[in-house]
Amino acid sequence: MSEAIAAERRTFPWKRVVQGVISLVIVVGIFVGVMPLIADYGDVWATIAAMTGIEIGGLVLLGLWNLATYWFVIVAALPGLRLREAAVVNQASTAVANTLPGGGIIGVGVTVAMLTSWGFTVPAIARSAVVTGIWNNFIKLGLPVLALSLLALEGGTTPARILAALIGIGVLVAAVVIFALLLKSDRVARSLGRGLEAVTNWLRRLIRRGPIEGWEARASKFRTETIGLLRHRWIALTVFTIISHLSLFIVLLATLRNVGVSQDELSWIAALAAFAFVRLISALPITPGGVGVVELGYAASMTIGLDEITKAQVVAAILVFRAITYLLPIPLGLVAYIIWRVNKSWRLSKEERFEMAGGAYGLEPEAT
Image 1 (cartoon, rainbow, N blue to C red):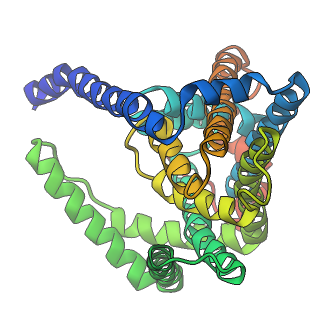
Image 2 (spheres, rainbow, N blue to C red):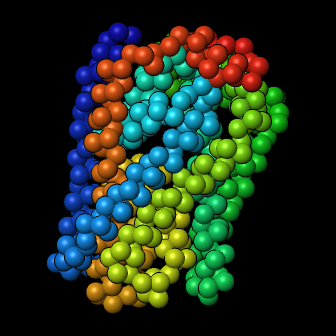
């Protein structure tokens, strides 16, 4: 068993290298081979250079506000977490996700390390991650439906958009039904736990690891405690998640208007439709932070039927928007990581953190 583990550790860096090379090839291919076919880079840079300091500064402030809105989502999903702590953990994990191949998984590790050092238990952290993930996906799946409805009122629907929206509706309905069944029935929760345990043990046997057990009881407990959380926090979760997604769209729309793309050239509804469908694409971990893939998705969906100058303005807006929303969190994440390493005053015991959570709605303190 030890030899298998040692072999896995020796090959692990190579997996990261391969992931990095593939991501680099995709990014270079998009920016060097595809994007110039959509808009001339000379016109794009000229558009960006023409922006004033006030315009750039205003967009940066909007970008900072957009980052801050998600802190409230995390606070709502994790009782006992303070806003300043949410800011530190979110920015540090986002910076990792935006810079490293497979950074999403590493970001999860950073999140767990920070939160456990502050007295949160692994079950509470997992429950928070699952709930916020589900709420985010509900919004991501619902946005295309909203966008299609608005486009229909504007007379801008196409068969492709209708098909994509119908798929989104189907997935959204299925996700809501599954989640509702999980919360409604302890039997379903236990069955899901047994199924996950069986799959996990099968995978562990492939790498010669011992079996795990107890997931049936854990799934039942997870269901009970999730119900307790949502009973008190579902409104805050829903409101703040919607605000977070819409604030990101506002940054995109403001960037388009600041580079000179008018409502007549690209309506806010058409921009919302592009935003909604690209948000779905960004859920796929193809490159760190979706770099390249997201830019191409926006450019392909928002430049249809536009003249060359307007196409350049749109691409310029996309690059500025991505610089603000993708690059801005990286230095902030470095600062956040330093704060976590230096500041020891937030490191509480599990009992102290449980008291800050207000007794977690009457539930017993959790063991790790």
